[in-house]
Image (tube, rainbow, N blue to C red; front, side, top):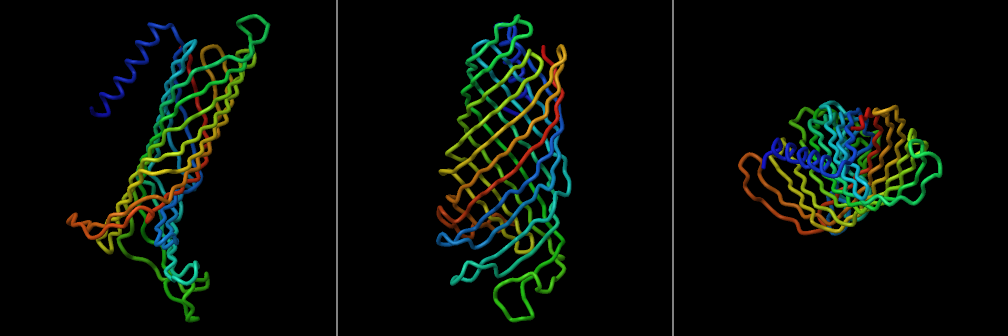
Length: 317
């Protein structure tokens, strides 16, 4: 099923559910800003061999969401599409000395986020734990909502230009910032990262006079499905990392919403942290697809630490 048919199917499910259950549909459009970085890590016998830091300083995106609120069920979906843009400097550090975990080589390259898509689907059961005794139209309430959250992201960067620091005049084998910078003129690196998490979430919602809303959401995932590809154009090498392994991922959300009739304005802050070091790596020749070598589980790692700030306009139907 292509993406267009999938989106139409999701919309029809929401529409049919609304007319059947007489729930509330909430449509939202907004702008967001991501600040943080994604790390690509290479391990050799549990020792860090290489660390690449892909930046988001910052990355801007448009966000769209669709929610269906029923009496005993809540379903919502969201998609964020980033604008292609320069997002900072990609830092590439190597630790090639086996006797000591110290940096030996370093390079810095201009990084451009070429594609960024983040989607999520949440299924929750709202449990009202408090309702004020005031009139219904102006009631205040507290709702606790256990939920299941499915989260997918697809990100691609291209890094080129910048400089390298591979050799110092002092003869030291360990890098320091005084080493001479050599201008880099090669083809650069392209990095694509696809990740999928299934989160167990607990959401706490406060409604004040049915005008102000505060949302506190916490989610935890112990397992990761991911695949990343790293193309080094100078060496004609393609590194493919696969993760079907234990991981830790934490997602925290805090948002404030002010409602006027059928419209509301929302400000949200989100923090996502994830880490795993259980990936395996395959090396191919990029131009031909020829298989060169394979490194077993524990040779690759991923780490993400990203904060998102967003403003949205919502309409309640």
